[in-house]
Image (cartoon, rainbow, N blue to C red; front, top):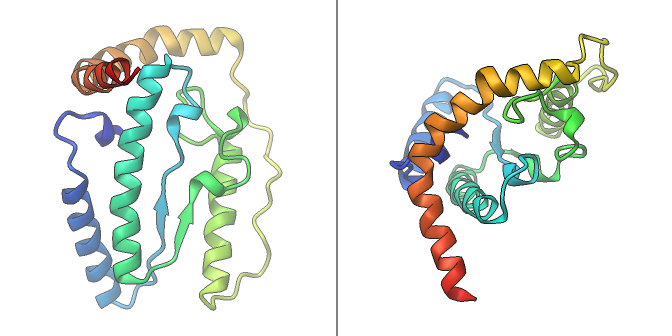
Length: 174
């Protein structure tokens, strides 16, 4: 996901790299499972124009993944269709990384794909969380100030020119 925010993001390069990785892993007898990303703009609270820019990048990334999945005929977990993918409880405070529940949902989705591929899955992954520490409002604000804003500043400077083009094209279309 981080790479989709970079100005040098190249979906065709991602597809070529992914195809190479899939082929090499399959040559060793490894069962490969791919994943397509959900629309992160539905998890982040962003202005509409930035949401459109982020959605467009995720769509480019998913198109590259879809191409490789189709060509290489590998099973693929579609995060956009994963139950709970857009629930905030599925995400850590940074909204980029899954929470414990999010990891359990991912594991459940992947074990279902493995079962469909013929692997014995003794039991489904439990979606009951172990009750780890829940971030408080203070914890959320602390993360935002100490990590979130600096990260957004670094990535924003790279992503903003691309987002500006999306915003300008959107404005002209109206």
